Image 1: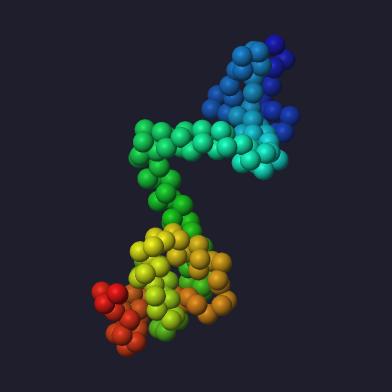
Image 2: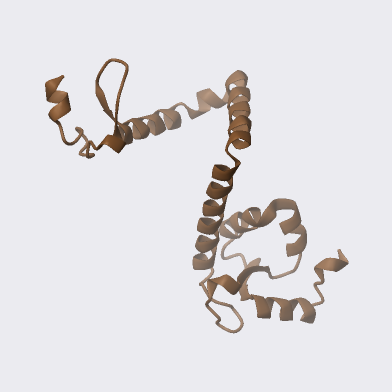
Length: 165
């Protein structure tokens, strides 16, 4: 046990700090980073088998529901971070500036549906769904990046009034 306590790094090179180590029931120091990576590898290797078990799927769904109820603040924060990450990815993929005027402030850039229909899609799939679809359909000409001003000018020019649907 003395050899384990005097170590400063695990065999994968991760630093053994109090935040990155725990003592398992057998009395060994375990690197949290290595343990997390091993768990991810195992889950990836066993994904199909786990998804084929309806009891496991139902339990996972219930666990997820309970977690969301108990920790709404965490879930809200994670969702906000994921939304921002996907939005920044979409803005970068579509050039990061307005297609009409070249405005580049990300706070005012919007994903525009070239042929209209964005209001319906946003209502049915949400903003995250629109962004994910925009990533999948990049280069098809179905979406473009416009600043808020140019987007509203286009709405009026093409009479794409969302309140008329």
